Every structure is written in structure tokens, then in C-alpha cells.
Image (tube, rainbow, N blue to C red; front, side, top):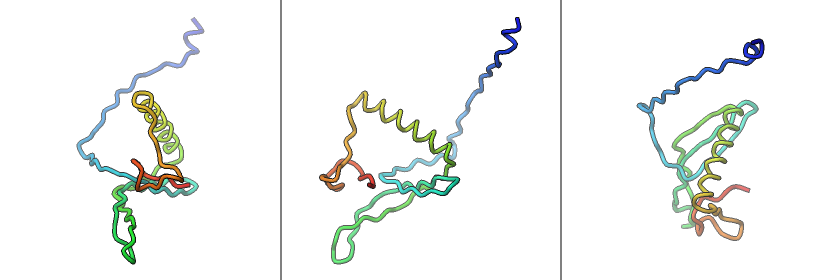
Length: 113
């Protein structure tokens, strides 16, 4: 009988999600910055524009800024890693451009080195 008293009781909690004020946006790039307490993520669109001397340039149009503490950022990184792994198991590897393949010739955004 004493064994049952030592075990912690588990309680189920129902999660309700309110999407009534949700706004969905598309982002093809992210810029990050950090402090000792937080990770700041700016999501937005890289848009081609004409730069000086008619050279091609990109304009980063920030659409959303998400600020998270480090524990939340780690949970996000783990969750994204799991989602990407599951996708690749079903659909094959997601290829990212390398140094020999410029971003404009690839199918996705270029990661910073």
C-alpha cells in the first residue's frame, strides 16, 4: 500500500487553442539576434530590388518579430528538427544551396555561414 502513496499523481489537462485572432503570413527568410535572456527572430520576405548601378539587390521586408526566452527557443529548435526529419523520411532530403551553388539558382534560401 505504501508503494502507491509514493507515486506522483498524474493529471490530464485539456488544451484549448484560440485561433480567432491568428494572422498567417509567409516568410522566406529569417534574421536572428540574441541577448543573454532572449532570442529575437525577424521573419519576412527577401524581395529582389534594383540596387545602385543597376545591380541586383535584395530587400528584407520584416513581417513578424518573435521574441522567445532560451528555453522556448530550444523547444522550438527540437520541434522543428523533428518536423523536418519526419518530412524528409516521407519525401526525401531537403537540399540546401552550398558555396558552389548561388542562392538565386537554388530552390531555397541561403543559410549564413
